[in-house]
Image (cartoon, rainbow, N blue to C red; front, side):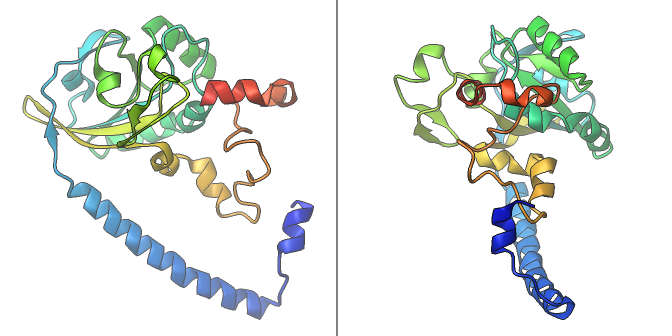
Length: 253
């Protein structure tokens, strides 16, 4: 525990601690009920039919959006920030993706297929995937409109000199690639877009953050130059002091 955390912590008797814990528990239960209500509202969202035909490149060759469901009725897509010509994927997206191999098999038991999609070419995706040791399905949307249509890619000349549409509003974003997650449902030959989320809406996909939120220090990022500046690709934590934070900011932005 840091000196700052120690200075702000109130040390009490076991009885006082128990009383404080019960008080917080009441708030946690209220939050859980509100989260359940929000999840229900999410499920009640209207659907939009996907009319455009998208083709992706994967390990098994060209695949359409319906193909990606792999025989299931639901598809969960993570939009990974890895663009054409990038030497490596976004560290923050990699931070999220480190949990995907464990999650995918359980999602499959609930009629849901997990697929990661990036605009980089398949060889670029495969090289980075091999480096990270990941096994989950990851396909390329290179050459299609899929990424722009779902707010996760723009042309390079748009990223700094004009506002772009992202997270359902218009503003600036310092990269041509952006993170997000989308859900789809397949009925017969029809595919429907049921949900997409971006930015802080992806927090729920981060098990490390959710665990840290239960600790005394929490995420402990207040003194850092920017949120997630401590995050590295999992094979680079030993190089932590050798990485320029400004350079990392440009990569993960």
